[in-house]
Length: 386
Image (cartoon, rainbow, N blue to C red; front, top):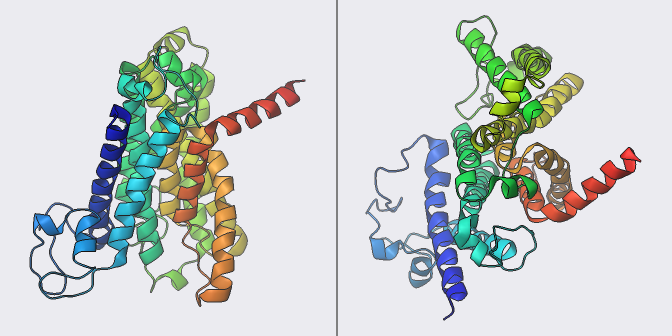
């Protein structure tokens, strides 16, 4: 086999293994259980699952979807998540490094060589986002919640990845091809100001100066079912406005104070600082797009419009795809939601829509169709400039 084929087989197998771990995350994380202990066991008979019965895809097929000991049926979800994750891993790998659907250059390397010459770095960050969003979507579909810890992990990974990718790939190419977010002096000032404002808001909340909205929230970031009808949702939305005010004020203040300061301009020339600030600004923009919709919708309809899990989900996406693309993905998501709503109209009793999966699909679309979106955006910018 050629090296390319070997890599494709390895990437697919690795993706399936990640999918196996995601199954653990999907079941345990929203239930407050450890992801590491105890080892996997059959929920029916309680017996531990041997390593040879825990091989992604193959074990499910060999066992015919049943526990070896008690013959209890294994949910097809386990097989589906493993297969889906493997297909995403190999699909994105092919589209990035072989099919050239998303065009970029890394030094003089072309095609598959771009992966081994540093492309693995941003591919790893992108696939962390996709894998986490697969888990978040599955949890949201089942339990109508998005674990905030999952979103915070992706955000942190995006910030660190954006800071370090410049050591694997020429920072100029990272910026030119939008491989990961970067910031100029102005957007870096907005990001650092927003971060300071967030720290102030959290401190004021800890001191009781700013009231917590939806005080009866469950640990996933939403009001408990029995308390939901007791809230004055408009009042709760105004509490969130108060929480956001220091972030907005500090962000604008930093923008006017720092964006033209020579020391700040020199500081943001560092690819590490630029990457961190670019990722942070993407996070804040991703949160802002959904949070604005949440607040306006709640004030307008008198009912919680979107969950805080959606806010943090898009913040995590923005930390990796950047402010422009996370905003565009937010407006793509409703088209997937419409398809689901039509399905529910005919085949489901509930009219509620878990929005996390559609936001995730919107983010995936902008990641893959990055180049056409850039071309479209450039045409709009040039038209306005003329």
